[in-house]
Amino acid sequence: MKIIFFDIDGTLICGGSELMSESTKEAIRIARANGHICMINTGRTKRLGGENLTGQVEFDGLLLGCGTEIEYHGKQLMHKTFSMEESKAILTAMKKYHVDAVCTTGAQALQNANELDGGVMVCGYRFADMMYTELHEYLPPQFEMLLVASPGNCGERDVENLVCLSTPLKINELLQTVEMMEYMITRRRKKARQKPKERSEEEMNLISEAKALLMERNNLTEEEAHRYMQKRSMDNGTGLTETAQMILSLLT
Image 1 (spheres, rainbow, N blue to C red):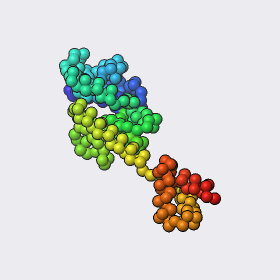
Image 2 (image 1 turned 90 degrees about the vertical axis):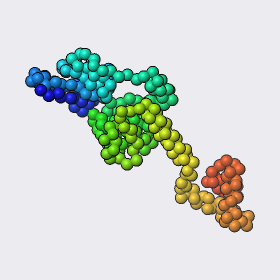
Image 3 (image 1 turned 180 degrees about the vertical axis):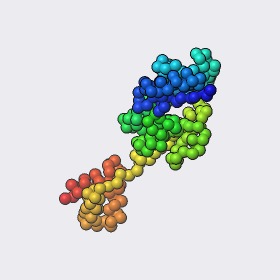
Image 4 (image 1 turned 30 degrees about the vertical axis):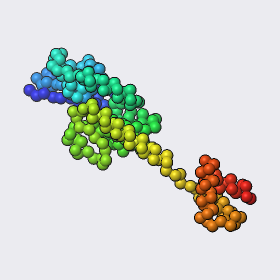
């Protein structure tokens, strides 16, 4: 007799379907008929699929929610829930950090990411349709990825500079990490806004023409003409290109 553990996503079901194939169900029936113990072992909770699969074919037991709930022959052997303090921390985080989507496949995650302005994507080591490495490769640049995985997978990750938290996960570590990543994203966006826009060749020519006109008409050196244009730009709250256009329109 052997105990056989079945993951759900990518094993019992594939391609986004919640239905097991007839060949999978038949293989489980045969294994149980031969005296083997068949168990579902998944990160999903019972409400997210455990009950659905046991309704399709009979299993001996369930290991659910990343090991937080264990059932054997219909009897609950263990069920670990969040403490009141942890529950309050989660509620606080949900109010502070807007959760835009909860996805069960990498394709869903990418679809949602492409419709959003950016943020932090928290994901596991493997989805039903792709590994975290593939998801990271196609993730829009305005997103940061937070990988939650076993200590072994965190230590052997194939993506450089990827933030990773090891399981078992502590709520305060998750919240602190998300807050740190959000702060870095905000800083990067602010820095990008402050970065001067690269001028086109046409804009550079306009500025040069205005500068040359000031040098000719007002007997200014190139440095003096440039400083004059900068001051006018700051005083009027306009860009240097707009200031150059104004000077050319007034003096020509």
